[in-house]
Length: 199
Image (cartoon, rainbow, N blue to C red; front, top):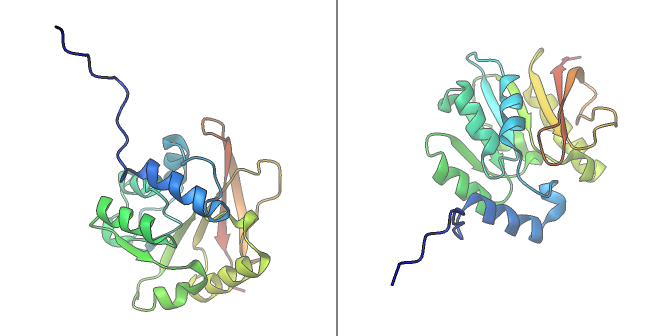
């Protein structure tokens, strides 16, 4: 009797990033902000906007690590990369997947406290936070934290699925430089790049 052929479909373990994403979106859909993880194409475009210099790169809402991986592939030094993730299970997943990266389990509303031991300036922030689905009070608190942490010229990169609405940032001190549509993502997304004006 011939042995059954193995299925060509990849197995998804209970601990995989996709399974974690599904669990998180079921338990807290407003915090996730998307029905599926970001595509490789979107992640690579976001990472390409990040300057390679000596400053820190801060990722807000690391999720399953698609953008984190792209940032490392881009050439961001793991010692310069800090990822803040509010979900305990996703933060643990990120730490296991990227042991060389500083993963912080915490809330973006408390960035000053979370980053109080950091002395290097932040050159870029990559945000996966679903700003449009968060309460305005939460967005304002995040904006206040950014105003405390950022220096003139720092970049803030935010992606959104609201393709035809005006770019949204947590603070009026962030001015949109340019935006680009990523059609090869499900759903299609737009990447908005802002620079910080300290005044």
